[in-house]
Image (cartoon, rainbow, N blue to C red; front, side, top):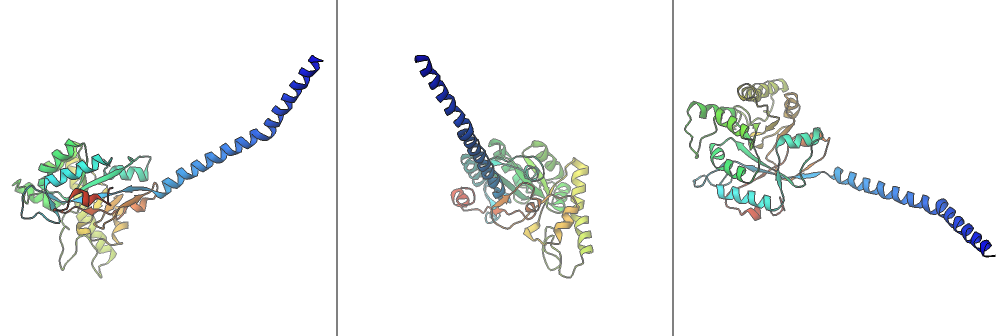
Length: 298
């Protein structure tokens, strides 16, 4: 009788186990699969929403000057900005980092930020360089060929008004602190004849294309031939942009352009057109670091 009782128990256990295999296990697998799909969907949604990339626009950096104002700040203000960004978890990136993220398999840090310096001021070479180096941050400097040419002919090295020479550009590039970009050879001016690199009203596409190829292309050529630098980004002088410039600049090999329009960029992988007309925020003198970055880089 005891043996019969044991057989009944074993039979009951086997039946329960069979029911588990038939009903419960498939349900568990379905739930597991659903969770995995849901997680993948969330991850995909996060990627589709893009990565926020704030870009700061600096110009001159001088300790004391009558020119301190909208486009000239002090080294102390720059250092305060850098400290803030480091303390808030930001990592500086270059245009090449950004382009590689969109075009290739490159990755970006969790909180990227880009520090751009326009025009190629000598005071950046003197004052910004040690600050960036000390905090392990990188800068993107967009140079103007004619300004550099003039400073090379007469190298005054005056922090108030001089621009970097060709040799100094090479030093900046070789330091690994800076990335060099194209700000035109001789179109950084505006007046009744032309506003920066913008197409004139009534100007033919062919004439405009020849202008950009001859001027912007000249700086590309000089940088490549003299120091092996090939800028991948064009920075519009004064932010004067026009839609006709984009296909021309693309044909010239530029993978991105920098504007002066304010805002934070949302960058998505494989969406290459988002790299043209990247927004930046100009950093003026006399505004506290906290106020400047409060909404821009919280």
